[in-house]
Image 1 (cartoon, rainbow, N blue to C red):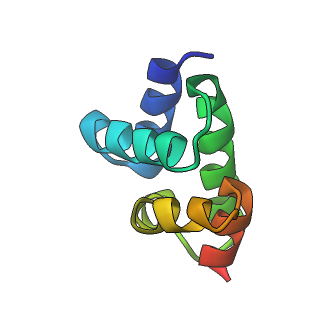
Image 2 (cartoon, rainbow, N blue to C red):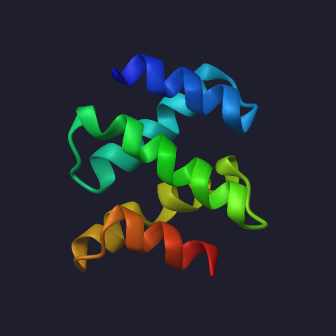
Length: 87
């Protein structure tokens, strides 16, 4: 799936506007030096964690936007950082 489709999906799941979802998606992808083709994975990780925890997709995305650069700099993956944020 492409970045636009996944960003629309994230917006719908999180109940946020498209521009905000695009910002969160871009921050996660760029912050962890992922490929744009990993957008579906980003949406899946956020949605899965939100479905199984007390955090919302938006809360996770905000936390990732604040920590991505630092976490990636010390070698933490997107998945590991997302899981740690929710603990």
